[in-house]
Image (cartoon, rainbow, N blue to C red):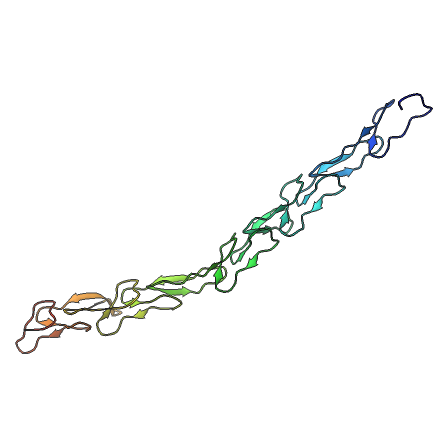
Length: 243
């Protein structure tokens, strides 16, 4: 009461007084951003506010905090005024209290509740913002395992004596034509030049290089063996003909 009246006046809604003989009422607190009204004010008590829990947010002045259930939304800390949005390569967890990386084979550009699948011919690692084209095996390589959405193409190198132009071939081609040979990781087989023959290595008979034709033999090239000189002919090592 301000005095001069027969009785005290009740505080109006939204105001309160906690003392006797008060000359006026106090405006009740309005719960601000990131908080909600846990217990409304009465004529004798102020508003009781509380922070929003994880997974929720509030701009303030409300009886409850809103759930972060919109597309890509989450809240990983108490007292947020607005929900956060999942960044690229992640999605909100089931409780909307944080984010998890997209698994391999999926991706997100951000702001999405779920991660999208990679298309056929594409792959991705965990936490990817996008998918990439599957690797193609290069020259001198062969494909050990085909690419899937969550695993990259696996390639191996051709051993000496074999060759490959790469791509999706599952094995390298044997250099078994006349005079053919190759070093390791070759894209094509080479041909032994004049005066040389392919060098055979190991028990598997792979032609892995060249060796010079010995004395009194010759080769015009593109042959697996050197030819002996005939009837009294002779040659020095590495010759293409006999004298």
